[in-house]
Length: 344
Image 1 (cartoon, rainbow, N blue to C red):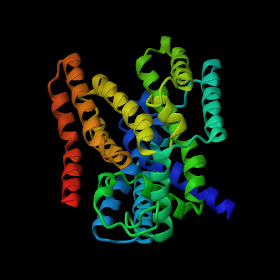
Image 2 (image 1 turned 90 degrees about the vertical axis):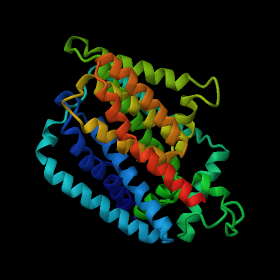
Image 3 (image 1 turned 180 degrees about the horizontal axis):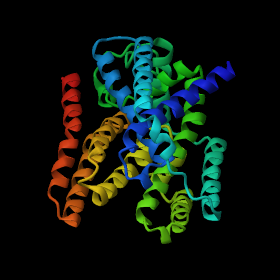
Image 4 (image 1 turned 45 degrees about the vertical axis):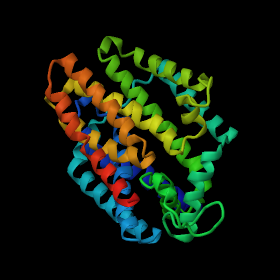
């Protein structure tokens, strides 16, 4: 069973994201077609597909086992099609520059992962996330059982969390990997998410130090950001507290993925706009994935990308940058409408 669980984790957290992600990064400038970008784009795509399927199955009043089969088939088909269409681009994936600074960056990330697993810091929100995951995993129903009392939910107060499919995603991953939701979230997903977070930070450093003469500073910058993250615990509301102590929770995922990846996309749009419209498609994917992490993304990410697009438009002197970004944010309006539909 251990071998089967391991292979399933590799399939859903590495192979499927890699196969889907390359369909996006193949359109990037060659220097940005990196391992980190491939996995991040692929996982965000996986999460966004699951979010949409979850809402459909919830609306149809279906069960987890049906969602599991459908989501698995859809993701595998997408991965196979993407792999076939983008096979030749895998050999063009760029690897990081391996030097002493990169070794330090890796060591810092290993330290974060080890300490995350040893400390096992939890909070009240963990009862909500894993409570929902466990009741969904055991009963097969979505938001039908109060995870504190075991009684059937009669009211609609819980619907404020409905769009956040992250707890359901944990239950889904537990089904396909045969790993208990708590172990999956606290150990496997938290470690994987930290790696993806670090990959985004490193890819931002590639953009900031684009010149080959400054390439040596990429790992130094990424190591500095990681070092700041490790020690930035001056408040329970800091991004470091979210990322390192609540890694598998929606708000932490939003801080670890959505915010830095939105910055990365804006930087890439500012540099490559006019050549690669794939960045705007990724914004739409990011919207769906972010809403699955926290419904607050509907306005938080929207405001961030809207204001950021205006700044980029001013910097590159192209108004269409902001216009295209606004069009890419249309999914957020759709999610807001869906939320209103379910609540009322």
